[in-house]
Length: 209
Ligand code: URA
Image (cartoon, rainbow, N blue to C red):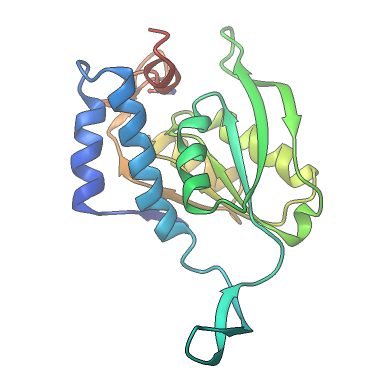
C-alpha cells in the first residue's frame, strides 16, 4: 500500500511471534517490544538529515556527520505507546518526548483526549508518533490531528501490528503521514481487536490482564 512500509526482518518476525503467544509473560513481552523498537527505530530514522561538524579524533582533525537541526520528537500515544517509546529513547537519547492520552469511548469506539503535552518548535522537528497497535485507526487519526494542531509538520507513524482497516483509515485521514509497521494482520474482530493480533497491548505490557 502506498505510504506504508512493512519492516520485514527475520529478527523482528521471530520476536513478534513470541510476543503474540498468549503464554508470554509481561516482563518478556516488554523486553521484546523494546528490542523490536530498536530494530524498527533504525529503519524509521534512516532519512534523518545530517550535517558535518569539525571534530578532533585522538589522531587528527576531521569533518564528521551529526544529526542536523532540532532534536526529533517521539510522541507516545498512551498508554501502550510507552512500550515502543522507551526503546526508541534508548536509541535516540536526545529525542524530546510528547504524550497524547486518548481513551476509546466504549459506545462508539471514538477517541477522546484526556492528556496532551508536547515540546516547543514542533514545526522544526521530525515527529515520530508511536502506538503498537493500529486497529480501527481512530486513536491514531485523533492523535495525529492533535499533533498537527500543535504545529508538527513532518510526521511518521510507527506501529508493531496493523489491521488493513486501520491502515486504510489512517492513510485516508492523513495521507501525508508515512506508516511503518512490523506486520499487517488479517482483520479486526467484532470488538475491534486485531486478528490474529496479540491481545490488548497495554494490558500485556503493564500486566493488567
Ligand atoms: N488495541 C490493542 O491493544 N489490541 C488490539 O488488538 C486492538 C487495539
